[in-house]
Length: 225
Ligand code: ADP
Image 1: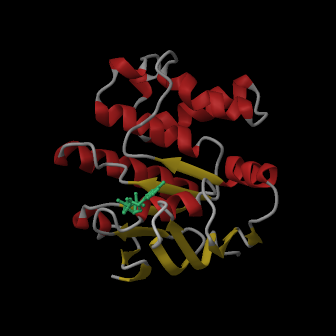
Image 2: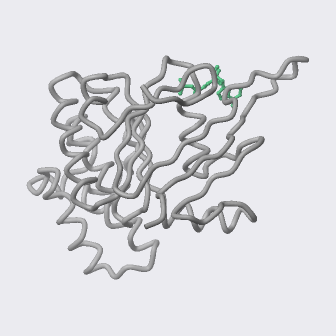
Image 3: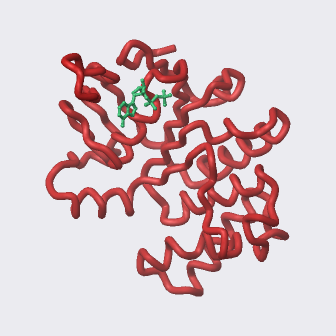
């Protein structure tokens, strides 16, 4: 089986108009195997979000390559957008749900955009919501849900189109410790239930210890932790 994600020699800097560029990533190599769940730990400002955005095809490296499911990503913006829609799920620290839609609709909509019928999309959304223990909240709008519940809906939305890779940027970073535990367990149930691969950035070493392995981003490179 192909690796879910392969990053090779990823370098990225920001030029702020000063003579010296700020180099954030300096030759990152990383392979995420099929079905593997990896924790990424890093001090704040180390470049976690930059790396996740490059892996998730939301940004491009200055140098280096990204492969998803054995396919080298390159070419047109259109091709990248298509790959991103089909193969990558993204979860942020803040849920970014659509406020005017119910929890269920938030999980159904990305599937409709991907050509799935309303009936199938709703049935799949109900299955996902059941996995994260939200069957009795499907008709609620985000404002009527707790922070942990909102984040669980965001996980379902990210996984709705069965992406090859889930990328999560501090998915429990905004929650209190007790809630963070429940929400993390829900995320793992979804990921393990689907057999998907995930790269999850977290400051929480206890949660990181529950994943298959841990990598550390420091001084622009990624190494085993
Ligand atoms: P982390 O997610 O680990 O906190 P980021 O990837 O957000 O780190 O940022 C890494 C570094 O890159 C920081 O020093 C940040 O200031 C800088 N940076 C991030 N995005 C930009 C940008 N668009 N322009 C300039 N500098 C940026």
